[in-house]
Length: 362
Image (cartoon, rainbow, N blue to C red; front, side):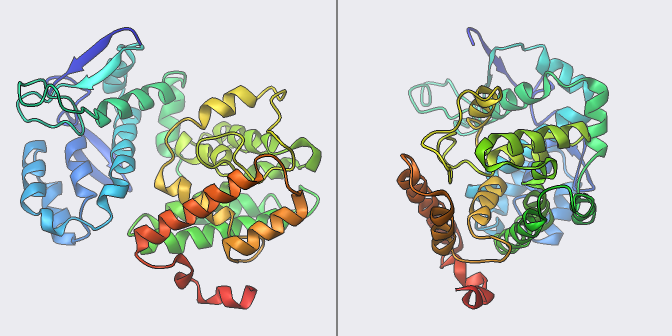
């Protein structure tokens, strides 16, 4: 990106731009209101924010900051990206303005209100500070994800969302298509486990379940152990895209096996992931995108489930016995334990305490 594009509140790129956005069947009049709505669990505060202008929503959110959900810092980036993605998928005029920025670096100019988290303030007091420009980064991610999708297909994606019922039907229709149906039982176990974790963290329980149920959907096309992980990952991704589902669903088919944004950090049956596969570079680059907290939950739950729930440690032994030890095995073990600790820290206690039935599977 050679050029920088600074934008303020007078463009369609800003969250202050008034446009209808429907998220989880709730209609918002701006991205700003949709973002602040997600900060709270209190129903009365949520109802109030729905009635407010962008500036009023921000003001009320600050005034009522003591009621913001405890885990907000860990989910705010994902929450903002969800709002921004839906805004540009649902509003063609906004999308056109975003795509017209080409490959320029997008930076929200927050000079005047000194926000160096979501944008960049260039006043004398702020010009030498670190500018995170998170909104600009999200806009560039959304631009990259949407730029090659035909507008008509975007309209379909707005309508095509998955829920628990439709996802279980998808799995049911896959029975008998592979050597056995253990992968379906595994997927259901992953989804149910992910739902418990998400609910406890005040996240979207249904969305977490759906991602768990579909993460291995590529195995409906069969799986030969000598082919490695790439075929079922790319087959699942392409299958869901063909059905009209967006990246927020299809992406888990690729990301679920790989930790630490690294194509070689997985429970592999070889030293390195097959670089000769025609999809290798696509997947390698795809993994560089930031993982949402939901995708991290699926990463972990995939490593806690066979066809039934078990500890990460027992699952690791199962994988070692099946695959053996290779050059990146130790690396993957370390990252797996780090991921488990990440969620222990978010919860404030051992994740295993959520699953008393786990003792029966030891």
